[in-house]
Image (tube, rainbow, N blue to C red; front, side, top):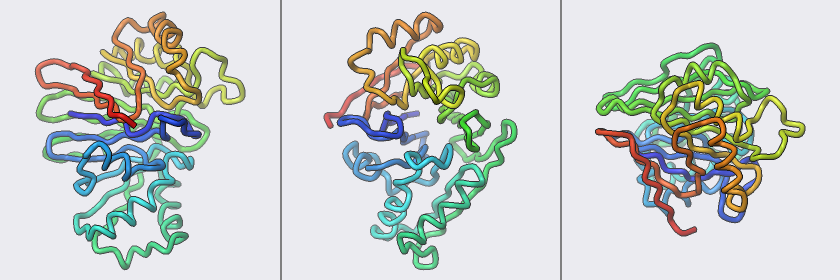
Length: 272
């Protein structure tokens, strides 16, 4: 299983950090989580086979998680895609995406590939997709709008990871991420206070506490509202006060590999 960090910033991107989005390779399946800004460009930069993507999993409707969607659909159309493409997300996301397409004159009737919108109920943990290679489940989290966390399992190797999406600390996520090999958790706030976003976003300490309670092996921090590189020592210190496992501060174009024999994280940075 390979997880490519296409973006790691919050709603406002930085010079070297685009809005948060992930590309996944699980055996022969290629998938996306969230759909931010320069999505196709980032995937081309990393030589990720985006033409083969089968599914997109959207966590919630906020603009930084969906505004790359119409361009992705246009890119599929322009390369002559024929393979079906499925979008999973909360009902309000699934409702507005066709409207977004129409705003850009992208008519489903003119596409040469089936576009499938699959609404996911934001009530309790549920399995939403199972293929020969992967099993995907979803769980509601706390963000002020309907929002989901996702868990991906490689059926061949058994390794799995959870992506929290945007969320404040919540019991549902602790149970959902129980004993996962890797928890990728948003940390919109570093060592500062939450300010006005109290309850719908997380701090480094929040993410570390969740990882400990969930008994996860590794914690990857993502979705930064301020640049963590200048505060890396403080961020790691804060995380390690509450979590004894390995902590990774994500970077754009970093690849995380989860291996068959044991879980190892190999972070390779491409130059931006």
